[in-house]
Length: 338
Image (cartoon, rainbow, N blue to C red; front, side, top):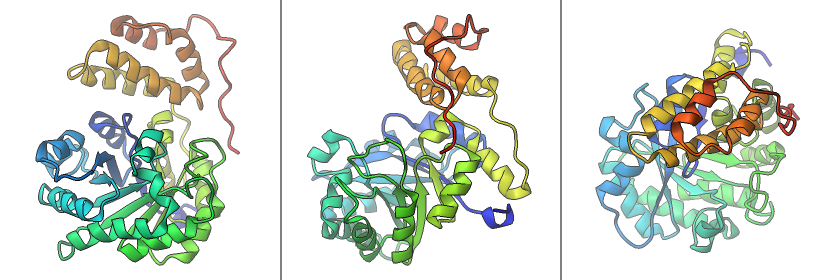
């Protein structure tokens, strides 16, 4: 695949409790992302007050963009078409440039309360939910998009759900290439995303298991999608989107991200998050991020082994940037492309 044929947009996925406003800023500042999506705003039976939208999407106060200028789309999760529409209209009034709808969250608590991937069991409910938002925004010029998985327990309704979202008025789809039951277990089924793309008339974005430039190329080739969305991969390698963007523009493959660069973004996150939450929470968030990194980078794995028992922030950060004490025997090797 040549660089000229590889031009496509890259989105930063919403990850509940993981990719917050600080993370969105840090990742988009490295370049490569064309849009980002917030953690979901849970809609039940009320019209939410402005503070809820601003808490989950502080960028609304700054033109709905990260400091680097990357547009921020606001995501809603729920099942009541009228209430979803009412809250979508309210979000638009507050400055949201796009409303994304969550039909992909696999969390059991969310699914038990009739949200996220649970709606994929009934395509007509997907269509009704999207249509409720689309009607509410009609004439505003604000698009509705949807993020789906390949199904709830299995893939039998994958195409039907995608077509239902399109029928409801979705302008584009992001498809995480697994079912709710499969969670995040590899592999991602990019060929199923191709089936969907071939049966809908709107842009389809492939998501899942795109950890490297090579996997980006393969995901696009197999799915037939021009655009991709990165979630855990953006945390595992904060410079991946920038390297893909550079390859798109020049055809040059840049070196792998160094530990020093990964460490720098973790330290910056700690500095900024520490202004808002207790140190023990910052340590927990750093371990969560480092745990994702270690699955695809040997040194991050070795660091994780050394740091996992440290509970205080200052010694954690000191050890994070210090020379490794020893090679840890239980460190998993970096994952190789499938």
